[in-house]
Length: 96
Image (tube, rainbow, N blue to C red; front, side):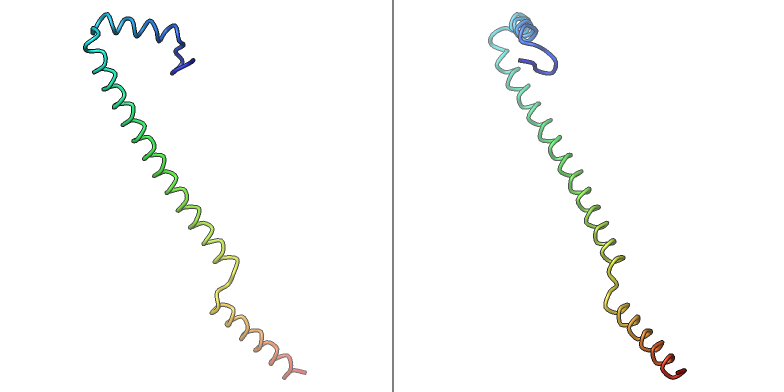
């Protein structure tokens, strides 16, 4: 067992010292406070990670939307290209 780089013998020594320093009545309260603190830190960490993931996903969506717009001309641009091609064809036909 390895918690935060501390093995089972070290954890045992720490628990014995805490029992001697704080006493058996105060130790459960300290454990409860430590558990709440760790839970709140984990919750804050998860929220922060979720926010980062959301921002990254939004940026990826924007980039993919821009690349689609660049690679595929919209309907108005396509109509303009079609009319220019017709004009060129008409000029070529009138010159011949």
